[in-house]
Image 1 (cartoon, rainbow, N blue to C red):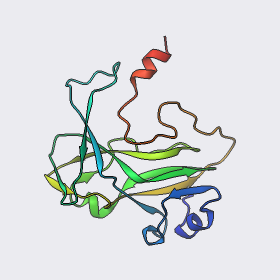
Image 2 (cartoon, rainbow, N blue to C red; image 1 turned 45 degrees about the vertical axis):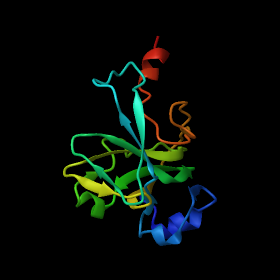
Image 3 (cartoon, helix red, strand yellow; image 1 turned 60 degrees about the vertical axis):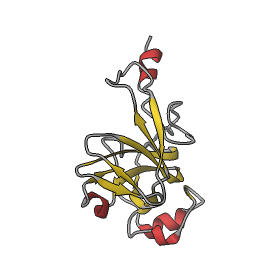
Length: 175
């Protein structure tokens, strides 16, 4: 079951938290999240799963930034979200997809109990100009059945900004 927009609004500041919240971004069964003005790009190729990748920070100016095809841009949402008792999911908005911009490569699935900003793994088919503050994606919530344990990862929980891959920590922890 997916929560309706009215149910999202009803649970705000009880079991669902979206900060800042703007009622104009609420949809029939989702909530639009906006793009922050910072991006990260990887700088050293090839990437190595066992190492923290080197990144460079970019700022999206008010007049926009042109994204190039074949390059991965890590962004983040302006909104900080937290949910209790539901599974948060992230998808691109259809208007964004129709321009050939993907907002996540594979990481649209959240864990029950996740709290933080959503890191966006953006890439495009065609060159496209993006702008800070644009409603770029939407969050929606699935009910969860059965007993569960809240997400507690030290890698991504309660993040403060854009996060590159921390996969390298899996190799350290497995030793």
